[in-house]
Image (cartoon, rainbow, N blue to C red; front, side, top):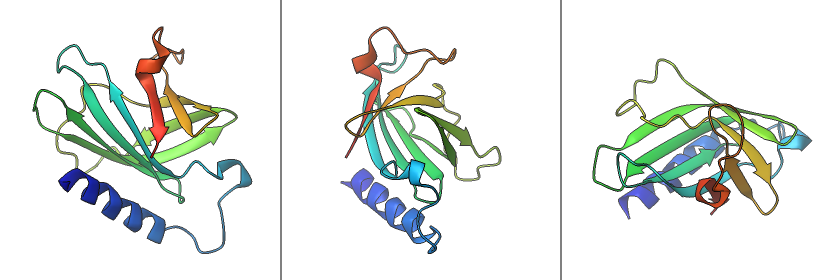
Length: 136
């Protein structure tokens, strides 16, 4: 419940900061929103991840290890080029709770409001369904 309130509050803040002149680009329509994934993690029995893409091209990400370790919080900006989405983290992020163990950066945009996480080489993981973010 606490996490859902956090996500909703953050969504309101980010959408409130968006430009009032309309959308940033026709190419970005429909991407803004909250995405969810439950990712594999050998060191922590899995990660539950909420990714909020703001209309103003900012993002917030909350990673919650399933083994009870400390949550990780990250903010930054996102950029879309073709069918790829890239996240760039803020380097001096005063709200970061702990350095993320798993770097989440590049995605392929898929139909049906889904984002497929890519590996460090920009390629899809072999078990793609385990790395799929779905829009809430």
